[in-house]
Length: 48
Image (cartoon, rainbow, N blue to C red; front, side, top):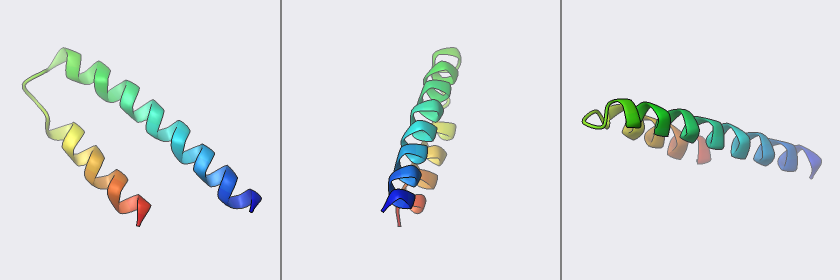
């Protein structure tokens, strides 16, 4: 029970951090969406 809770909190924090970094990167180069798409693919693989 606690392990799942800690893992979900860790993933949520990591996801939030990655999104902040991703948004910061996108603001610098809007035409490049490749890093964001790669991130979402990796995030979906982690959920499975």
